Length: 277
Image 1 (cartoon, rainbow, N blue to C red):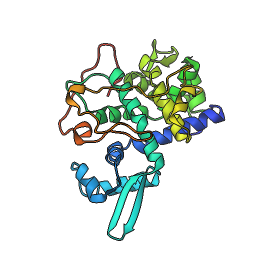
Image 2 (cartoon, rainbow, N blue to C red):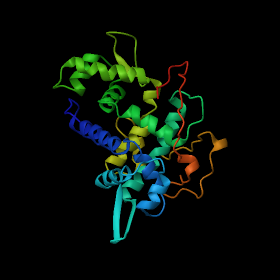
Image 3 (tube, rainbow, N blue to C red):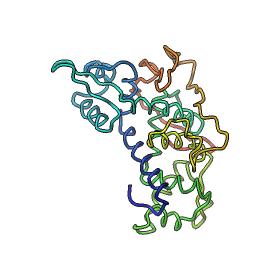
Image 4 (spheres, rainbow, N blue to C red):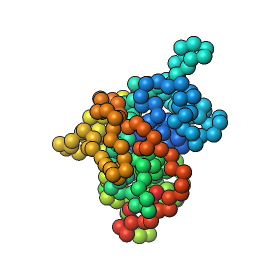
């Protein structure tokens, strides 16, 4: 991320979270991470879980996740190679239920129930808009900020007008509010509700336990409950987890929950103007 006018500690925090989002947002990355949530798998076993990927698409994805330190490639013999989570990759998985909880409450509804994986992917798309993380950070810490002030803080070495395209996008996405041209910007309720997600991503990217999210200097809350709440995503059609969740692990398994949707899903905006998918 470009240098900002934020204090050094805050700028480093924003940069780490931006990098963490960049690791997992590219298409199929979260699905691959979830496919590897059990024992290490051979390449062919992972490919079987991802039948929609064409030949040649899986290998560069696995290589990128290995380079990011989220997946480990283990060569047992020249003919026996497996892939599994690193400790760092496994520690990231408990952040995903927080994303689903936020999505189910704040993203606009669709004409069909969505699997949790699609909720995650839609949410990550919003959060990885250019300069989005830094803008949301500033608005959370300062409540209301003018466009000019945001430009000076978020992109001090750039033309001040460059802040307005990402700002307009965040307003269109439903994460930022303003009363009109020339008026200050502030977080919407949906933007404020990202606190558990950003707090957890910040803790993870800094190598801290996720329990530290509640003490985040910007996104934390006094006396907050740090254990992720249980979430329900169209419970009637989703299978129950096969086993209890263990610390640092996830019980999300099975193609029914994280299956790839092959049909289009047109979306209908909420009357309240919830974040767009």
